[in-house]
Every structure is written in structure tokens, then in C-alpha cells.
Image (tube, rainbow, N blue to C red; front, side, top):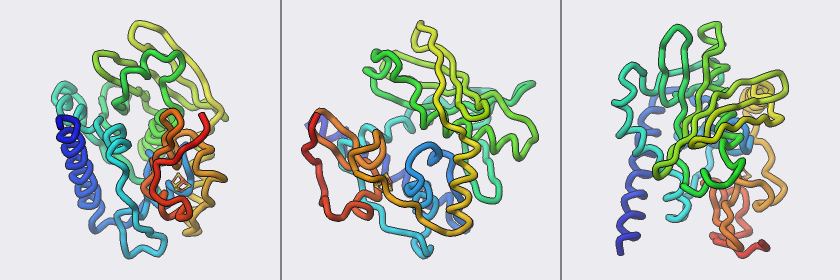
Length: 260
Ligand code: SF4
């Protein structure tokens, strides 16, 4: 019964954040969002028109399963509660260019501007070596940084912060030619790494689709890419993308049994 209440509360938060999202877009032209960079390009384009039902590329999104929604949306509560602690920071600074619009969580405007993106995550992610940070979170933050550079003429400092049940992690993230690099601390453990994504090039690729008003292809399989169409829990795969029904109508609702 308690879990049912928590799930209902999370669903309410999702509804509220979706209503807020739609409200924020009312009267604006659609644009790509930095949170889509580094993930599914198709989803990036569909997300950009999600709040615009009359748009040529719009498709109806389906609500996520309660279990998946609960996992994916609880960070917003943390940000609202902790925003006052960032006394010198601007909450949700607005960044906008021809193709992109986005709002990183915080801007600390010191001698060097510092953009901070917060992610709430499960406790076990702090205990699995090399789990944090996720590549696509770094990509989102670097995209914000590159937009800031286009608007203000210099690359800001970019910090990614995770919390979860008394654990924390903080990383400095930056782009370097074909790579994205990060270093920082997971609890009291120093950690650094790199992954082969040029966020600037990925942005240019997405801008190409966007300017041609073209929806990219789906992944080859709904189970192939981690954190894309489905989220796996042991031998079950749950639809984890609101466009799952659109891209994979032949599969039905799920969850689906998959090999471990
Ligand atoms: S269902 Fe999969 S292929 Fe379709 S938009 Fe979502 S992540 Fe991309």
C-alpha cells in the first residue's frame, strides 16, 4: 500500500513536470534540447516537438510504466528542495540558439562561469565501480557548455553532480576534440575517464536532421542499446522511452522477457 502511494505521488510529479514543460513551450518555436544529445537521435528530434501537437513531426507519446517513471523522475524533487542552498547560483539559466534551447540546473557566475547539472540516481550506482558518470549525462552538460560558448564567447566550467541516499559524486567534464573527458570523486574515491563522443559533432548531426525536418531511423532492436528503448531488470525489459509504441508497435506494451 505504501509503495502504491509513492508510485501515485511520482505519477503526479510526472504529470506536473510534463504540464510545466508544455507551459514553458507555449508560444515558442520548437528547438532541440541538450538532454537529448548522446542518446537516440530519433528520440532527440521527437522530443523537440513533443509539446507541439500540431507540428509535422509530432507523434503521441505514451506514459511510462510506473516502475520506470519512478526510477526516472525523482531528481526534480531534490532540485526544488535544494535550490535555496545554491545561494549565489541562478536556477535554470536560459540558453538559446537557432536550433537549441535548454536550461542547465544551475549557473554559478564567478570569475569563470560554472554550469552545474544535477542527477539523482540509485544507491547501488555509487557502489558499482565505473558506473558513474553516465556518458549521456556528460554529453548533456557539454552541450550546455558549447551553447554557452556560442552565446558568451568562452567555454564555462562544467560540473556534474549526483546524489543518492547519502552518497554523492561530483565531476568536472570537458570536451577535447573527438573525446569527452571527466574527472572527480565518487564519495571519497577519485575517479577519471574518457569516452569517444565528440559532442560538438553530434550537435551538428542533430542540427542537420532538424533543419531538414527529418526523423532519424530507430535503433536496430529495442533491446540493443542500453538506456534507449527499454530498461532491463534481470530478464525483464521495460519500455523506457515514451515513443516506444510509435517505433515498435509490433511489440505491444511489455515488460518483455529477454535473455540475461
Ligand atoms: S523507442 Fe527507441 S528508437 Fe524509438 S525514439 Fe525511443 S529510444 Fe529511439
